[in-house]
Amino acid sequence: MRAPRDGQPQPKIVHKESKIDRFPSAEQLDQLPTRPRGEKPALLTRNRDS
Image (cartoon, rainbow, N blue to C red; front, side, top):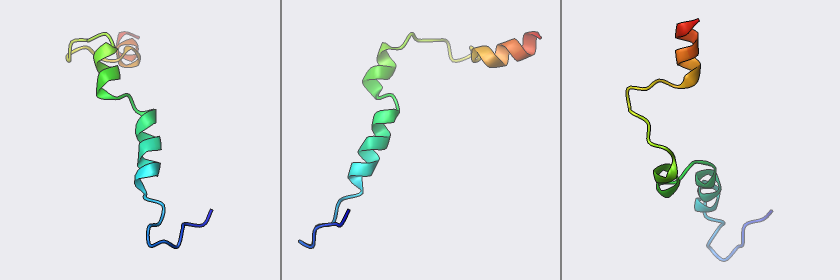
C-alpha cells in the first residue's frame, strides 16, 4: 500500500478509528448494566472466596 503523493499521506486517524471500534463507545457503555463501583469482577471475587 503506497500513500498518495498528493502531499496528503494516509492519515493515521484511520488506524485509530479501527482501534476505537474495538473498544466500547460511550453509548455502548451506557447500554451495559450499571454495576456499583465497589463490586469486583467475577474472577477476583471467585479467587477470594476460594
